[in-house]
Length: 429
Image (cartoon, rainbow, N blue to C red; front, side):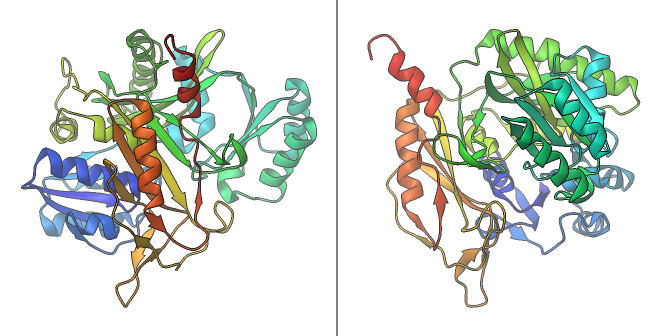
C-alpha cells in the first residue's frame, strides 16, 4: 500500500510512525516531511499549501491513500482537488474545514446546532470591538477569526490588555488577513481538554482526551504558543464525559455541517472547557492537533490506518471502536530560541542516547548541506515519554528532553502539572 502524507511537523512524524506500526510494509511518501520522517519513508520537497504539486505527486506515484496533516492545505482545498482526481483522501473539504479556518463560521455552526460554547461577538472595526470589550468586561477573550497557527488568541485580564489586543489585530494587522475579523468572547473559567473524533461525516469515534499547555513558560506564564507540551489520558475525562462530548458536541456539529452541504469527514478536534455549567466548546480544529497527537497516538493499540483508509474511501465507521494501551504518555516540546515571536533557525542539534521509554518526534528540523541536524522552526522536537503511570511518563519525557541539545533551547519542565496535583491529592498519597 502506498500512502502520501502531507506535512512536515511533529504531528506528521507521529502519524507516520503510527501508520508504519500498523502496517510495516507500507510504502510511505511525505511532502515535505522532515529528517525524522525520512527514517521511515521517502520525503519529497513541496510547499505544504501547493495544492497542484500535491495532486500531481499523488497521481504520479499512484498512491492508495493521502492523509493531510496541517490546516493550511485543508483550507486551501487540497482534499477537494484530490477527490476530483479520484484519489482517496483523509480530511475535510475546504467548505467543511471552515469550522477551523473561520472562527466566526464555527460560532454560527455551534449556535445553530445548539452546541454549548461561550457568548461571542464578531467585529471588523476597532471601534466596534472596543465597545464589545466594555460590554463583556474583564477578563475577556480576543481571537483572530482566521488561521493564526494556534497563536491568535489573547486572554485579556484587564480592559487595557483587551484594547491592546484589538488594536494589534485590527489596526496593526499582527496576524495579517487572519485577524481582519476578530471575535470578542466571554471568558470561560475551568480546565481545558482536547478531544479528537474520527468521523465519516455522521458517526464520531472519540479518542483519548489530552491536555495541551499553550503558555511558553512553567506555571502557565509567558506568551501563547502553538503548544509547549501535552499529556494523555486526562483523569477528568471519564467515559461519561466522552459520551457527552459525542452527543452534545460532535454529532450536532456534524449534523449542521451536513445541512449546510459541507459534510465533514476526517478528524474533528474539539477544545472543551470544563466549566461550572458543564462542557463548552472553546474552538474546533479540522485536523489532528499538535502536540496532542504525539501524546495520544503512542497509546493507541488498534489500527489507526484501517479507520483512516475506511473514511477516505467513503465507508461508514458505525460500530467501530478503538482499543487503548494502559498507561500514560507525556510530550514535552523543545522550542527554538526566540520562539514564539521570532524563532531562530540553523542551530546544530545533538541527540544523546537516552534510556527512557518513549520516542522523539521531529517537528522543526532539517539537514544542513554537511548532514548536520539543525533547527528549522519554532517547535523543534517533541519528546514523548511513556509509563505505566502518569508520573512515570512525565519522568520519561523529561529524561528524553534532556537528551536533546541545541543553543537557546526553551522547554517547560511542568507538563501535566494539574494531573500531578490531582495525583498528590488522591487518597493514599
